[in-house]
Image (cartoon, rainbow, N blue to C red):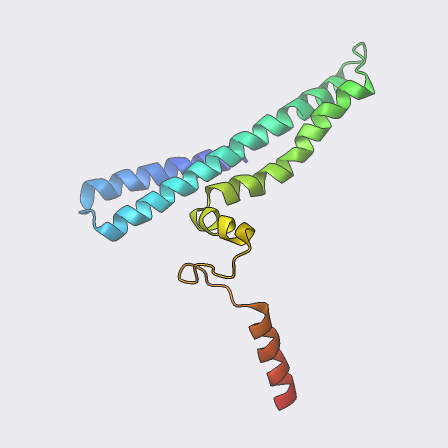
Length: 140
């Protein structure tokens, strides 16, 4: 996993460097580069959190597998297992926390105000979907 992510990082930086050398930078290109950098940051943070969460579990598993003279108590072994399981909880939090659209909309959702910035959202209200589906079923 880490090899793949670092390979993607390497290719992106190399491609960006080539683009900066040969092409003039337009406003659209700057926006695209900012999005790429943000995506790389998210990828790096997710990879680092994965390594931080799973390394203790891997160490304990290796100790239990290959060392017969070291005995770990069950209470000591449970913490690395819990840390590994938190990896699945942390990934969506990282993604949502670093997503600009999500961080802009979520405070409005928790205010429980009917007014949400419709300009930046692409979702369709559930009532509309149900009505359209119901109307299509009756037409057939």
